[in-house]
Amino acid sequence: MIEPYPVHDLPHGHMIHLPGRGSTFVTDSGPKDAPAIFLLHSVLTTGLLCWYPLIPQLNQEFRVITLDQRWHGRGIRNKPFDLDDCADDVAALADVLGINTFTVAGFSMGGGIAQLVWRRHPGRVTSMVLCSTGPYFGSRDPKRQTNMKHVGRLMKLIHPPHLQPQAAKLDDRSVPDSVWAFRQFLSTPVSRLGALGDGMSFLDSQPWLADIDVPTAVLVSLRDRVIPVERQRLLTDSIPGVLTVEVNGGHACCVLEADEFIPKFLDAARRVTADLKETAPV
Image 1 (tube, rainbow, N blue to C red):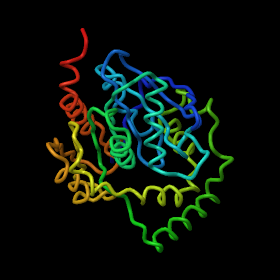
Image 2: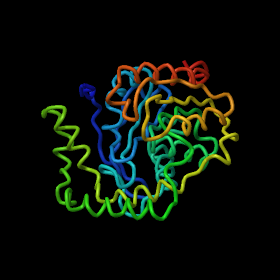
Image 3: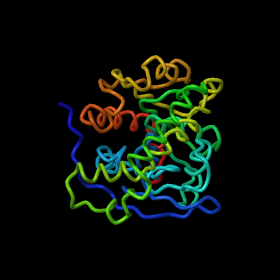
């Protein structure tokens, strides 16, 4: 039986206001003079829930930033869900933190957002690590969108918005790991699943993948039933000079098979940022 990775040594976070955009929950850990890496989470998770197994090791070498994306966790909720807005939030957060250039790493939905950060903010992204993701999500098929909205309405009955945990409970580390993780999951309004899927379906990076001009690694989850391997390989086949790393895991490998995922990610991050570390000031 596959067990979630134990929760330990998590960074503390706080709400940060992004001028003209809204406020979101952010963690910022690791050496402030190390290369900065933004970890962008998957759909229906949070910055910590998606990345908590990796953060303690990654922040020994990098300045690691997570944020809750729009309509997830304690993220911004003032507009319809749109991946372009999510990408612009990343750049806005970097501005607030005084970070000019940075690496973006994204898991599943976060991988799509990472691609958009590179596309929409030229010169800011120095490298990318794209995990269990592809150049598009789902489709614009009306039948699929209707089904997603039906699921969302059903989930609203099962998980009404007033059941979302308060901030104090989300920050409580004294509870069992399973309770902490479940609270993180409940912090996203699952009733908006249809709107989230609709917003994600607008992404299609295939026309410009060949234009990506920064060191990029793609972690391909070989037993993925959510993002098919052939869709993940559209990235590895199209991005110039890409580093391909295979992970023997499923779509939730960042948590459920973290012992396999973490060393692969660390190696990929080191390799795509090698030039940055060599040129960093002493």
